[in-house]
Image (cartoon, rainbow, N blue to C red; front, side, top):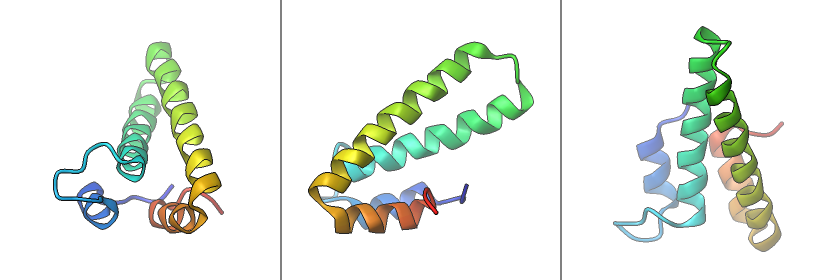
Length: 87
C-alpha cells in the first residue's frame, strides 16, 4: 500500500475550496482511515472491534470506487493511481 499525503490529494481532486463531500474526497479520507487502522491492527492484532470497522470502511470505499468507475472511468483511473490501490 502506497503512502500518500491527504492534503495534497484533496487539493488535487476537490471541486471547490471547501469541498469535503465529493466522491473523490470521501474516497481519499476513507483510504487514510484504512491505512491508520491497518497500522493499528499490526500492533494490536486482537482488537476485533477495529477489525470489524476496517472491513466496513473497506466495503464502503469499494462501493464508492465501483460507482466512480461506472460513471467516470478517467477520474477512477487517476484516483487509484494517486492512491496506489490497484495493480
